Length: 193
Ligand SMILES: Cc1cc2nc3c(=O)[nH]c(=O)nc-3n(C[C@H](O)[C@H](O)[C@H](O)COP(=O)(O)O)c2cc1C
Image 1 (cartoon, rainbow, N blue to C red):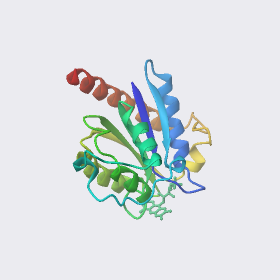
Image 2 (cartoon, protein in one colour):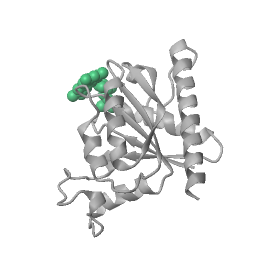
Image 3 (cartoon, protein in one colour):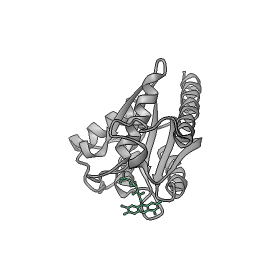
Image 4 (cartoon, rainbow, N blue to C red):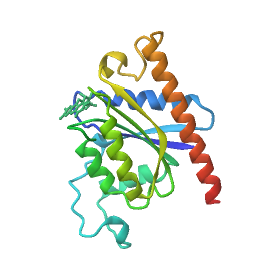
């Protein structure tokens, strides 16, 4: 299974990229699965201004950057969204990117991972309302990490001290959530055949 890991923050001094690498490392440890980071910094997506909603436009003609982004998403079986909470929601950069998607996520499972000074529960709640619009399914479990991501994780996405209770708990949450994501992805793939 190929899993896209989409980073919701484009700040220069962000910490979300550490969490994306953590997810990627864990996916790559599992058999037959591969995580690919999709970093919005690598795509020059303008503010969405298409004349027609993407799903209602079969003759859609997008610019090469948008096309590259859509291909990166559409060629994967599942998605993990890593987003900080900004002002009680997820980020505007992420919303702009998601608005470009037409059918690339149809019938695919999505795992939500949010973080923020209060943990990102409101980012998760708002994202759960968005994915039905993209014909995707969010898996029941989500991961929420309160504060201190920059202290807990290093730049490579590794836990600085894997022996603490907090680290063990995070590691376990990710393992269980990824196992769910893989389960849903396999179940949906079989059903599509
Ligand atoms: C504009 C802005 C608004 C924020 N609002 C919230 C918030 O509503 N709830 C929260 O828990 N954290 C909030 N935070 C804290 C961020 O979620 C936290 O700093 C996070 O690590 C940022 O992720 P990033 O470094 O990957 O951008 C906010 C941060 C910024 C920059």
